[in-house]
Amino acid sequence: MPGDGESDTKKITLFAVPKAFEGHIGAIQSNAILSWLQWTDCLDVVLFGDDDGVAEFAKENSIRHFPEIGRNQAGTPLLDTVFQRVIENSRTQWMLYINSDIVLNSSVYQLVQSLENLNLTHFLGIGQRTDFDQTDPIAFEDPNWESDLANRIARSGQLASILCKDYFLFPRGHFHQIPAFSIGRGNWDSWMVATTIKSNAPVIDCTEVLFAGHQNHDYRHAGNRLSAYVTGNEAQQNKHLAGGSHYMTGSVATHRLRQSGILQKKTRIPFLTFIRDVPRLTKLVYKLLIR
Image 1: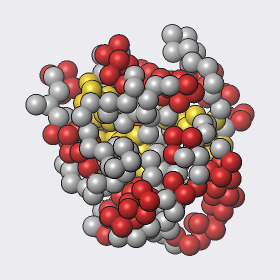
Image 2 (image 1 turned 90 degrees about the vertical axis):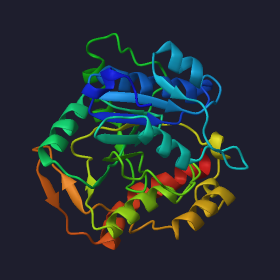
Image 3 (image 1 turned 60 degrees about the vertical axis):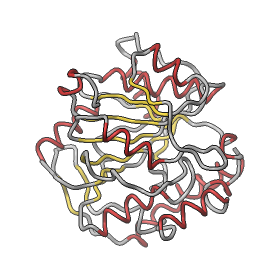
Image 4 (image 1 turned 180 degrees about the vertical axis):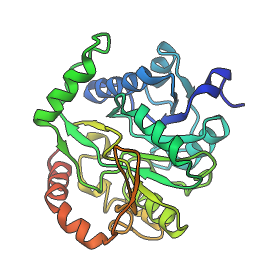
């Protein structure tokens, strides 16, 4: 059954599959998810998976939680069951899959208002994240937490490569059937964009409207190697399921959502976009290789 009656008043079902709540990863996941809970008058937050600490965190914070999900032979969660279950158990008009280390702020309200005004029936929303360092718990009880964080990120945060797609926004009912992609491995995210473009629906760059703050971390959970995302077995299986890598065509939007709420069509030349993104892409590869 879908969520309780309270979710009827909410606009977006936000869902995620956290890793185990251990060490630095656990700390930044707590920051991210608690940031989502600041906006529960418009967000319905749902967590998936049974890694250590997920059920306890969900219970402590009164978050809907579905522990049983599919996993591949390596134990990595699979996305097909997650997408299917969340759509079956939600009532909101829009869905937002997001990585569990992404901090959101009150820009979610501007996003909702823009979506309501545009009244689109089929689209995919993506956007660039902003990388920043965060080692301590964010003091959400401080009424100035949002402005303090924004000021710090303005000084030292860095916009990430367009290859880093950390959230996917889409109307409920779309993507209810997707391949059994391994979460956190390469190629599935670009498939989301490429398949939307093939359907002649807009892929909307929401970077200008929605702040997505990525707390920097190492990549030990994925073997600490670039191969986990590009050449490893799970990444290659994702590539097979996706029908290719789609790195270039699957990373460039067709439209841009402006702060004014206007949806602006982009001149879409993926190769030129990638050329402009090379400095950020180089930093991404460096992180994957050494962290």
